[in-house]
Amino acid sequence: MKRPAITFIIVACLCLRGRTADTARAFSVDADSPFAFRLGGRVVALAPGPSSLADTRIVKESTGFSGFGERHRREVALFEDRLEYTYDYRFTGPVSPWRIMRIPIRDGTQATLVYGSYEKPPRRRTVRAADLPADDTEGNDLRTVRYIRLTTQQGSWSLDCWPRGAMGYVPADAAGLVRCMVVRPVPGALELWAVLSQPRAAYPAHMREKFILYADGRDYADVHPFDAMNYRFAFEKVVRLDFSGMPPPKKPKGHVPCGTEPYNEGRGYGWVSDPDTLRLVRHAPDMALVGTRVESDSPGQFRIDLPPGHYYLTLNIGSADAPTGPMNVTVNGKRELSAFRLDKGRFSSEVVWITSSRAHLDLEFACSGRGSWGVNALSVSSLGTLNEDFVLTRPWWHFEH
Image (cartoon, one colour):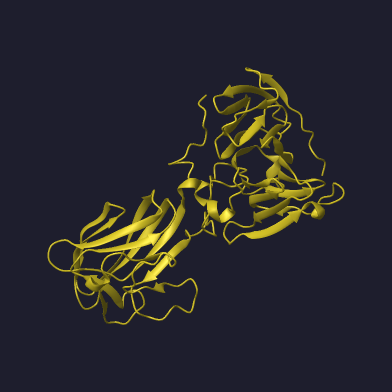
C-alpha cells in the first residue's frame, strides 16, 4: 500500500510558527505542519492532516488554536492536565489511508495499548522500542485502538483514542474511526492510521474525532471504568443485586444476593440506613428476583458506588402474598417514583433514567401513606460516564467560530 504524502500549507491569521507555550499548562503545541504536541518541552506526538485536505487557515485562540479549510476543521485546546485534539473531515471522493498521529518510541519507553472490539472487554499489549520493526513493513496493525499509555524515563502520559465511549458512537459519521482506526508499529514509533476497507474507501466519507492527551499518565480504567461498550446491543449492566439471602449465583453475571447488609466501601454497595428497621421477607412463589424482598415501614437508604454518568436503574417490585406501597423512590435527591403501589400478586420492573454527578447513587425508599415499601431486586445499566459524554455535559468544540 502506498503511503500518502503528508503536505500542509499554512496560511496564518496570527503567527503561530514555533511553540505556543503556557507555563501553567502541561502541554504545548507547535502549529507548523505537522502539529507537534509537547510535554515538558519534549515532542510526544505529531499530528499531520490528510493530504487531500491541505489548505489550512490557523487562528490563535486564548488556550490553543483552530485550523480551518474547505471541508475540514481542526482544534487544539490546552488545559492544565490535558490536551484535546479535535477534527472534522469531509472527503468528497475516494479516501486514501492517512496517518492520524505518530508517537515516537525511544529507548526506555514502554507503550501499553488497549484495543479490540467494543462489545467485549478490551485486550492489552505492551510495546517497547526493541519490539518495533527494523524496516517499514506492514501487517502488524492492531485494530480498534481505544487507549495508549506511555511510560518514559521522564514520567508517563496517556492518549485516549476513543473518549466518546459507547454513547458517543454516531452513525452519521459515515466513516467513524470506530471502523477504521489502527495502530501500526514502525521503526522508532507507533502510528495511528485511518484505513477504510473496500468498497467503503471508494465513497465520500465523514470523519469526526477527538483525542485527549493526559499529562499524568492515568490508566484506561481511570477514564473508562466499564469494560464493554455496547453501542450495538444492550447497555452493560454494571450492578445486579437481589435482595434475598440466597447463595451467590453460579453464573458470574447473575444478580448478587444482598439482603440487609450495611454499606461496605470495599464492596461498593449496601444499606446506609439502620439495618434493624429492615425486614427480609420471603414470598411465594420462591422465584428468583421476586421470591424475596426487603420491606420496611421506615425510610431506607441504599448506596451504590458508581462514577458520575448516565444510567438506567431497574427496580423489581412486587409480591404474590401482599400489596406493595404506596411508596416513594428518590435517587440522589430527585423523586423518581411517587405513591407507587401494586396489588397483591402483581409485579413490575420500573425503569428510570438517572444522570448522576456524584460518585455514587443514593436510593431512598419511603412509605407514602399507609402500608410499607418493598423492593425485590435492582440492576444498573451504564449509558456512559459523564467524562465520555460530549453531547449533553461536555463541549465537542472549545472555541466558537
